[in-house]
Length: 478
Image (tube, rainbow, N blue to C red):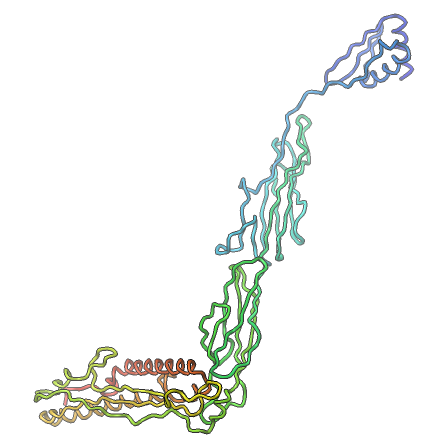
């Protein structure tokens, strides 16, 4: 080929005829006409050969300059894109409706499977693209096919606590020949936050004496710095009352484990459990134990007579009328009114209490010793109606029966002072409860016992209708 071109150029130089027609259409060819013959060759090859030959055969001023053809016709540029499906912006995924605000794209709890769909597309419908996950967390999967538009599906079946970046992009698979497809790959970065569960610490075990005030030393932590809530529960019995179940450090009074005549040989062990919550997840439960030992002062009081002292009830008669009655019910308007509920009753039991000595007898540690006593004095207001003698014999018998039934009802109140009612109240054992305690603890125990005993007495009246169900109700049938 080269020899042939050299022959042509040499012939043209010899004849003085050089007619080079350059056609700059899409084919980019050179047509060289020589006499009756023509030859089409690639323009670049021709220029290269002519340049080489011109340097050999022509003066410098006739040198042929090598140059590339002008760019071909420009075609329209077509871009690619990537979005969450059916949305122009990122859609947040949250673990639950009541969870704290999600400050990244996706917030979930560990172990909660989730997924999302993105859409990848090309500006020209004839373009073929696919969705591709560049990087993501271990264990996550991503699936996509080829098309336009096409969907990519992300799924993570068992997310692990932490913060992760998922990088996705749109890749070009095919581009039509008559367009310019952008080679720039659009990408999308999704931030996934998988919550860390909080941690709980119920605090160290403690050993205390009965009647002492105990403070549970709970705490909690959260790797994500979420605000925490606290929940305490007691496991097993005997149950005690915490001043709050929803604070870090609740308090309670250690129960008594001795009685008036003997001490329990074993210690009492109470178990408490703490769980914290960060608004999304509960922590693993944490447990602590409180060992309660007999108070030394209480042990020293064993076999000593320190029981509650109950004085003999004092009967306080009251007269219900002075006029000569016409019927039995004339007595009713004069019955004493119970100040607790305003109802008219035929009898009433009240009581006084005190501690002896006053002030309390304390040991060298400032705690109540065995010399203290709790004294209860009951009073019964008994209705008296001398004028009943003016009524019939049957009416007199009914009155007598009514008074006896009323006194029977009041005896129930006296029993409540000892043992309470339905396990509530009663002053039996209260002296032993306060021995070994501080003055403040003792007064708290006494106030609570008085309140519980009054509550028990009121409940007894409600259940018996102030003795009516026990016969303390006048009848005119006699």
